[in-house]
Length: 249
Image (spheres, one colour):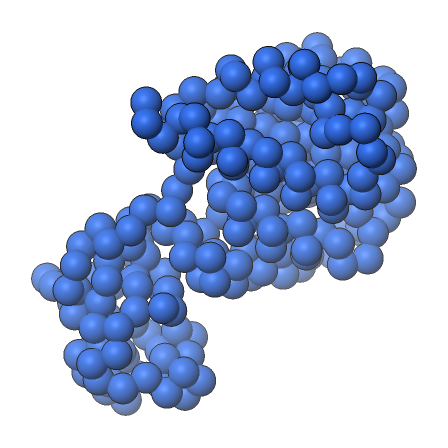
């Protein structure tokens, strides 16, 4: 079932009025007909709707069931991702959104292979945000996760201070006990940050600084993971723990 995001101002009574790009997608790409059903998401909730009418520039959707589904996690996951090379960031953002992340924070770190020019950062962020929106539609999210501006490591750690729990998977951390203990700290409504190093890994000074702002060093297992694999693994670990252990609280 297709999913479209609108603002509250698009709702009038029991109808949503869908225009612009989503209207074009409904009419010309999907070729929907009156009576077809789909989801409309606004402000963290999804309503089941039926296409009631198509005008020259608007698709009018009638709400048939409010609060049809909630795909949000009981915690808010934020991925702090050391900038990877090539198009790996696009893959990371896509999978982070599918796995329930609330936001993705690209981070410049000392061992990042790629360096993005200042003048290109805004266009990169806009491209990444579009990928987040596409992934949110595909995975039936009720919100479009934010891809933040690229941050320096110093500013990323300031952002990390807003987290209730800040996890730092590190290849030099032995054993899984620290991971078990850290996951057990997750509670409903918490903001949980996950810091993933780039291809070159963490500089030890970066680990020290992360610990100074409350970062909990954890392990993702005995194997050395690529940066994109580490991000997906860490998010999956937190998502599954939250789904299995927190929902019932």
